[in-house]
Image (tube, rainbow, N blue to C red; front, top):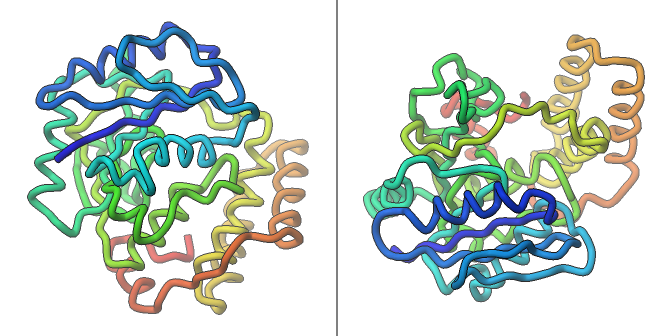
Length: 290
């Protein structure tokens, strides 16, 4: 299989970006063509052979990645699968790309692979980085219902069939939106503990827009993808979970503002998943109500 890689950057981590690109270049097997997208910022110096695209404005994470996809032809058609990697990540093992090729070749129904994210100093994988409810053992590989945005591989046939990431999301839940559409089209998603991306341990709330966009996009996700009876159930569960977690006053205010925004603003095209996909998600351990 021919692999490509998409990396988006704000241009503010040149050393980490160079280390990531070097780790991609060291992968076993055929060379991986890489595109680095400057998301509203100039791209720092990159090694020879790495292509760059500089956008005049920040399109957000899904928008920037979609530009990277199109750099490989319509829906990424010039390659068989694309790696999406955070610019401050690192592939510590040389066989990750080859494992991706083997996994896709062995299972024609496999559409997306989610890598394990590990802290480079401690080796610890945060619970939130294991994309399933039973997340206590990050070393266990399994079928899952979503994937990690900056540490994954996607078969380009999936993108051609179900469309790209939802660009208007800007940040948060865009992976689950694509995952649900892929699952509804019959594709499978694997979490692979043996495919590792090193990434410093961080809190998602470090982003100023975190609470607002997590809430807004949660509503958009449900409105776009769930059968009508499940929309209030799913969002009601998440409202209760948010209150149980007792966020700070400012965080809760931002979350509730985003929740209202999600109802008041266009979510994009609505394509509710089939009920058999709901059952499929349930059998995989994550019914789409949580």
